[in-house]
Every structure is written in C-alpha cells, then in structure tokens.
Length: 104
Image 1 (tube, one colour):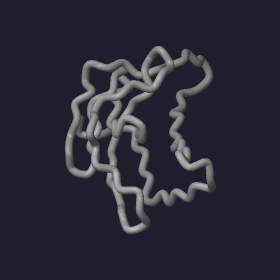
Image 2 (cartoon, rainbow, N blue to C red):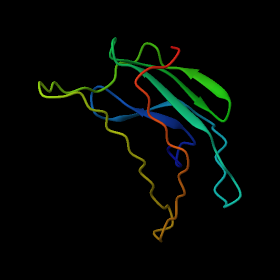
Image 3 (cartoon, rainbow, N blue to C red):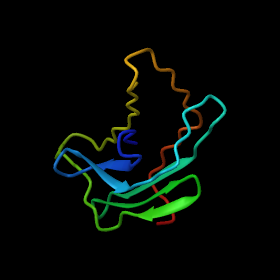
Image 4 (cartoon, helix red, strand yellow):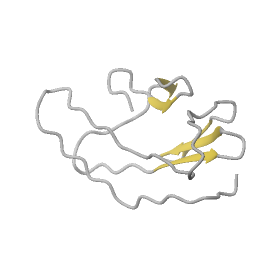
C-alpha cells in the first residue's frame, strides 16, 4: 500500500512497486482491520488476483519477479511499513497463510 497515492501495489518483474488500485480506503487507527489475499500462479509465472477488504482486483496479465535457482523453490513474503510522521510505527499482522495451490 502506498499512503501517498492511496494505492495497492505489487512488486513487478522489473523489481519495482507498481500501483494496481487507487483511491483505496485504508484506515490508520487501531480499531481498523483489513483482509487481503494475493493469488499467484507459479506454473505461469503470473499474479492472478488480489482481494482487499472484499474487493477483487484482477492481476492475471502481470508477471511476477522470479530468479532462477537450481537448488530449491522458495517464496519470499514480506510486509514493509513506513511512517509518514518519522516516528515509531506499530503494525499488527494476524493469520498469514501461504499455500502451494489455490482454486485459481
């Protein structure tokens, strides 16, 4: 999420953040909870969709960033949080689930 653009973003195959949904309602107070699901099809090397707070965004034409590794398959997942106020930022994360298949 980009606070300056109110936009959801994905990490492109070129290695950069790209917005795919703008004017996203993101509430920055403690009582707000958000649900997000990102689906990737590793057999095609493309994102499939993102569901954020019940709204589905198609990402089916967008390639993921990948690096060839002959030793083992791996997935990198992260949350990056930055404060616009240059102060400590507290982020709670709950129920992270990573699966190897989804009903694409």
